[in-house]
Image: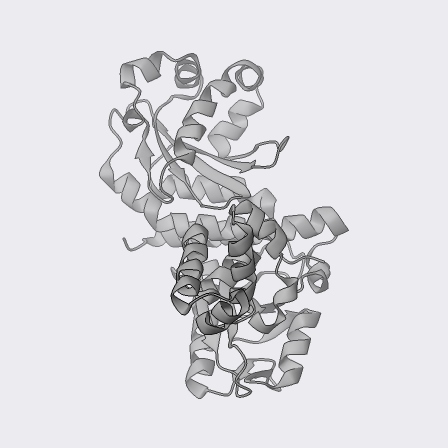
Length: 384
């Protein structure tokens, strides 16, 4: 579904949250306006033992939470919603589900204490829930509340929600990396050198204004990619160079609320014959000038698959419940070994090795080595 003017305005606010998490209220207000909803609550759950939920709210919910009635709801009634979040945790990602389709009849839902209380205090009745990701470390989900006068959630609300979901998911993903850096090093973007993957921030015209040490290392090799005098990324293939610049411009336009591209993956061939670099290009905004006033551009993550040691494979294989044999295969996949080489290393037939590779990719939910490496980096950012 194509976004209208309100949709693009929402994108601009959504990507501002990646660097400025305090902007989530405005982003969720804009998202609610796009889907003609009254309020939105976004829940972020860490799956580790003892992890606390983080709830991000639009204005209606936030204002309510600051009242005595809101305090009572939070202390005594909000726990009743845990069954709703548990239900969403078992649903496919990016699949908006009306509350009346969760297996609980609407008349029973309406009598439930938390539902009845919110309806009376905020005027919200029917809700649309959606799971945002398939991350084994984090569970992100969103509840969209509609005015009590809406007896049945219109189909267009689900369509409009689906149009924004990739962007909400991507912004949470980017924001988690920066939040981790801020919490651990008490810094904002100055801690980029702690990330062992290449991280660069680019303006819409492609000019790289910030880069970490890994980017410096990669471009110094001049093995298929370097920075030109104007600080733009150049590759050994003019077509790839043009593609990178076009995608940086488009995701930067998304950060400004003028386009609709939440991420782009580009492979860059290396003349040395080593495994191609992988560029992950995503929108980023910085309205509070932690880096530069009014920055709306692209976050470019440059992955060198030849430097597999920085991939946190030990934790990744535990999260995805890989056997010891699958763990070994996963490491060799990440290091670029072919099926024949894996068969030789494991002293098995090529058919067995091929099946083991397929099993690893299947458990991780990806279809290629590049996607596997990107998943490892996304789930467990390589912060030193």
